[in-house]
Length: 255
Length: 255
DNA sequence: CGATTCCTTGAAGGTTGTCAACGTTGGTGG
DNA sequence: CCACCAACGTTGACAACCTTCAAGGAATCG
Image 1 (tube, each protein chain N blue to C red):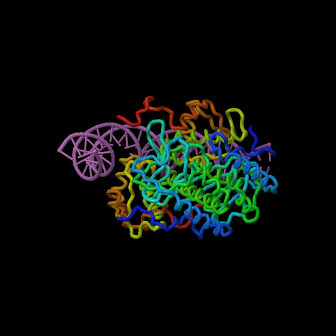
Image 2 (tube, rainbow over the protein chains, first blue to last red; image 1 turned 135 degrees about the vertical axis):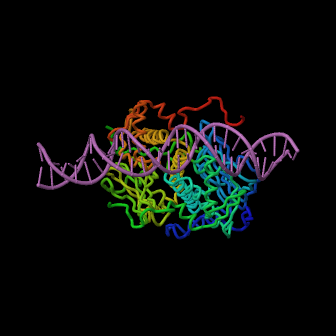
Image 3 (tube, rainbow over the protein chains, first blue to last red; image 1 turned 120 degrees about the vertical axis):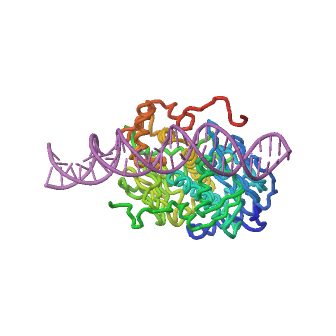
């Protein structure tokens, strides 16, 4: 079973050269190192599963990095329902949304026991924003978050249940792989089906049926919080909405 | 009919004191002024409706502000369908997503004739990111974009067709009002029903039916790109998913 | 080993998508 | 100025997907 802990001296490789503007790459990479340093030199804090890392409408005191464990950000609806806006695998930085705000708009909840490292937003943070390198890196992280949200919006707007579930499972796999938390084709995803449903905008019942179908189709197998990918290419295609493209020859423009 | 032009010496009031962390407010407000200055001292460029402000997979040369006109950011699917990820009313800053990337992931298309002011990303921009105030302001803008995307994700995940359409119409109204482009209860929204559908994740046909229903219910009237709000409070409630809350007394936790 | 939470499955109904056709509008050129 | 054309809007019938409701089984935790 894959470990949930972040290796001590490895940074989260969130900055990626191939898509970064060349003018800024060096500075951003430096900022990543510096921020990693700042996190590493801070004390760790442990919280149990279900604990709130960030409380709604409360001031947020720190920018956190998940040294160990998973969390998610959630927003409630007037009728008591919830939508999960973001899932934080180990290694994620939590609190970017609120770093310039005086209160949190959503809750962040630990999905497993977590260990966090924290940078105080009133003390250490202002200096970090004054440095070009760290300011650039934080902007990079905000941009990454934006890109992921765009994927999420696009998926919810266009994909059906099966494809949305595949997107969730594929994205989590890709992220864990990039962070070197997983090598093979299986990984640990500590979410209940209700939480998956709140993330992909479906009901628990339908998520359950969808997982059953994906299992029968030999695409992915999800059981007891373990995801086993059987057909990575098929999973990827479904996740990108290319499961069954009607006509191969670009029929976009002219009839 | 409301004008589409941005008054010459007014800045887009994107920074809002009540939600901003006090430590940073002054700097961010300064950054806003400085960036506005940079935009204002740049030459304007005019493009016609349908023109691409940003081409997909192309390097993006500038950060733009819409001095006049509307635009949208769109992503295509393998089957030729499209999802509109963001709508830019006049006064918006376009290109934040790509300012640290070497190529654009999506297209940005002019919805009306537009006039843009541009800051060159290779020349003037690096200095702006080196200044604490402008770097903070750009981070603020990225955060604003993030917040809007969160709303969008939440709406697509939880709201039904009627509520999603209300959200789109209400959000556009609120933004135009904050930018002082509109005073009464009606405004110009230069989108086709197909574009609205691509934004809220529905089909044209269903958007059409939904608009008809909202018209009959005397909530909003959308005709010829003019939105006339009949029941602002009702529109807001629907947009926030509180159109008809089952039980008033917080039934969230205990059964 | 009780009790709660989570998973699983069936049946029925509603919301939204698909297909198809027609009406309306605005622009363009004869 | 009118005729045409293309894009956009509108409506109906039907089908598909997803939700709701309900209930029983499995797993986990005190």
